[in-house]
Every structure is written in C-alpha cells, then in structure tokens.
Image (tube, rainbow, N blue to C red; front, side):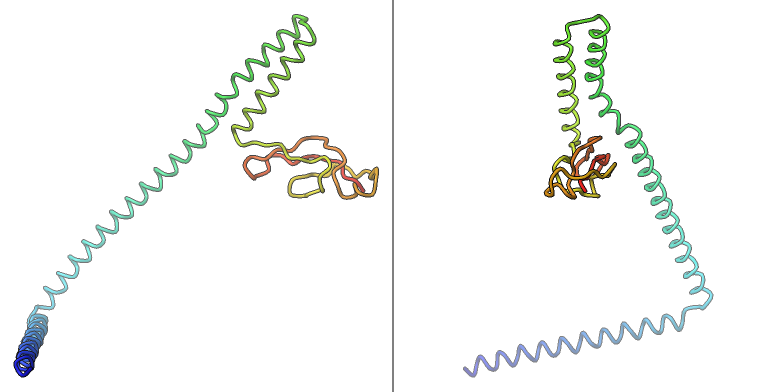
Length: 192
C-alpha cells in the first residue's frame, strides 16, 4: 500500500512539474508577443494591416461576384422552366386534338350519329384521363354545402325543400382544382 502511495505521489509531482513548465512556456510566449509588438515599427504594422485589408476586399469581391453569378444562373434556369414547362403538357394534349379533328371530319362528312356520339365520348374520357394525369380534378358541387373557397354563387334560388337551404342546387359551370389549388371556381346556384 505504501508503494502505491509513493507511486501516486511521484506521478502527481511529475504532473505538477509539467504544468509549471507549461505555464512558464505560456508566459514566455506572451512576453515575446508583447515585445514583438512593442518593437514592431508602427508604419510596418500599418502596411501589414493594409495588405490584409486588401486581401479581405479581394475575397469579398470574389464572393460577391460568385453570388451574383449564382443568382443570375438561378433566374435563367427558373425562366427556362417557366418557358418550357408547358411543353410536355401541350405535347400530351396533341393526341386529344387529333381525335377532336377526326370527330369534326366525321361530323362534316355526315357520319352515323351513334358512332359520332361514341367517338366524342371517347375523346372526353381521354381528355379527363389526361387532366387526372396532370392532377386536375373536378370540384364536387351539386348537393354539397356552399363553400366560398371552391364555389362562386351565380344566383340564389328558393330551395325545393328546407334541407337544401345553403346547399348547391345546380352547377352552371364546373370548377377544377390542380392538386389542392383552385384553377376555376365552380359557378353554382345556391338554395335560399
């Protein structure tokens, strides 16, 4: 036990001695730094500081130019997206337009009325599928509570029964949403 205590005391003494040496070195370093600044020529110090200032100005100008380039590039990319964003939407609409043109030709040539109705129905379904692929959905209106967030009241009409008061009786023009944003408000007749 006594050996362990002596060993611990020796280690503590060595650690204390190392700390004292480290403190002395720190004091010497601080003293040298103070002597250097006192001995340094004020004009040399000013020149050195001006040189550092110039370097910092150059770095700032470089960063400013870099940011300006980034900003311009981002604006150009955004403008390009807006300009060409409708391209894919329009490309997907072209087959629907082709079908409408064929239907018009069939009507002008006096085709069978039932086949024309069926063709127009197919075109309508194709167009609805296209709208769904673009996340465009119709707003449910008739029979629903009147909601100013999605409905626009065209007129008020006496409700056929008391349960229809404040509800949409008829839809004059369908409304549509893209995602959850209203593209066009549904124009409706509201029961009063």
